[in-house]
Amino acid sequence: MRIALLTIFVFLTGCAAVPPQAPWFEGHFTASYADARSTSDFAIACSAVPDCETTIEELTPRKTAPQKIVSKGARRVDLDVLNNTLQAVRAAVVVTPKLYEHTNDGPLLRRLRPLLESSSKFTECLGVAPDGGDSIALCRLGSGAQAAPVLLFSTMKPACADNSAFCAYYLLPLARHQ
Image (tube, rainbow, N blue to C red; front, side):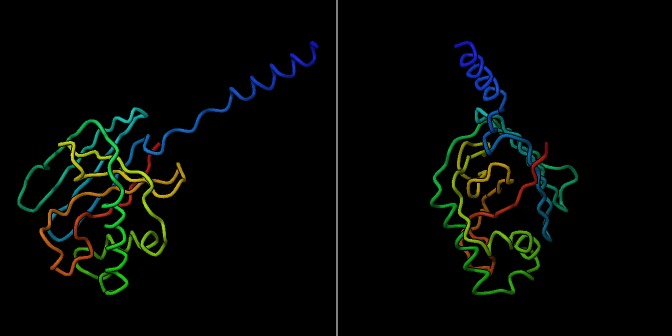
């Protein structure tokens, strides 16, 4: 009887020592986006609540100091529009492969190429915009919790008539930092 209880105790102690896996959005992420008009740096820090602090610093040739936007909080957002955006970018580069060489969009599209050539979809997204809307979202691809998420932010374009691959949202791969 003592051996059985000791075995159960050792087994349960060993199980308790396994740390729980952190939520996919927990951590510190950064990214930069630059085109002919401006440079934007993004920093997002999220905890398990989910509570995310998003900082966006934008440098434009006309500004001497960066514009800094900080938001706190996060909420789950609908995946349909964001997955449709991903699908639209995929379709655009299939129809017009020269978009990879586009002056403004090309550098970003080349960084996204592995994602665009895959069949991955967003499985979960958090809205992290300062106004609580869906203009900035942190999205998870597939089920790998250790993979860095993708940031989507609104293009603010009224239409997709400018031969750009990005109509509703830009997609920006993030780097995860420990």
